[in-house]
Image (cartoon, rainbow, N blue to C red; front, side, top):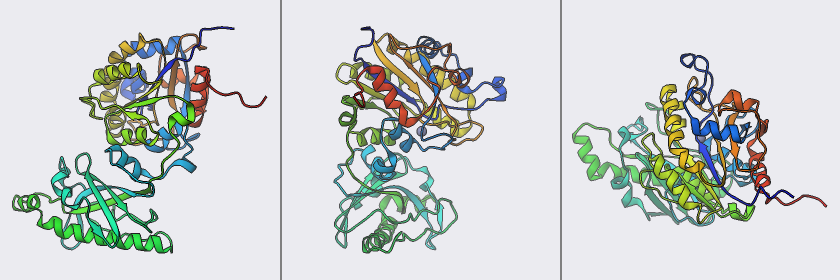
Length: 411
Ligand code: ZN
């Protein structure tokens, strides 16, 4: 029996929105193909590659549903909306059945027209939302916490409330704010919609009196005087990643959503100084944190966001440069005796400036695993890779089988 494959530790890198399409200015190469990336190419050469459809063939995936699927969760049964993930992302202490929302602070005119959905992109909502944390209305307790920039997270706690309510966000400036409506005829849904509409009305009145808003009004700047709520979801605890796979797991990410995804799976979220979730993120510090985490954890999920942001901006040059920067910082990880996986959670082609259902390049390397003919990490090379085309739900099967820890099915 070969002893080349031991139960080794795993680093699983998601470069958000990595997949792309050919760019004319790169002579038909994608940003990943055009990038100078000796580390990734060496992993592809020594390891095995393929193409992954995160949610299924051709399906256009959001980050949260895609990542949960890749890590072995069945989103039909185990996804409860974006609200709980966002709330966990900012480390709110949630209870079972809490109704969770993500929110923006917006600027609203007295006639209820939304003038700016992001309230002039204020950097923090702290001084606006603080006074509402703990507010009680008709048996509902509201927990309200600031999140990144103009965002906040809101939890509704109490008996007889549910997540089956609409959003009040018209999704476009210049439109009237919507009324929150029950999405079915249940008493719970009606009661929830009613209390949320009261919350929005009351907080709007109070925000108009907020000191900071009075100042902004004087300066003729957009006020942060209205909550737009969306992503309603009821919090339920899920089986942890450890319970599913027996692997003690950590998550290293900059942006709140991805920390929330980690916490949803019961991973330990490791805070890294300088990890911003933006293009200026400290990749070196994140890679170092990964190496440190390997001492304590079996599985480290490393999330890098900026590839997706540049895709959404259509900035193929910056996307390519960012991949090059990541590749440089990756080098110390190559010296570890680990299983390393590098992939994306979906494609974000620069030509579309949004997510697409195109398959995502996938590479995996560990000593002793099968190899293929790929000599570089890129869309075309991975299309001919040894893992072929597969789906996100297959990923943890591939990983656990490679680690040699998957239970045999049948006799
Ligand atoms: Zn994503």
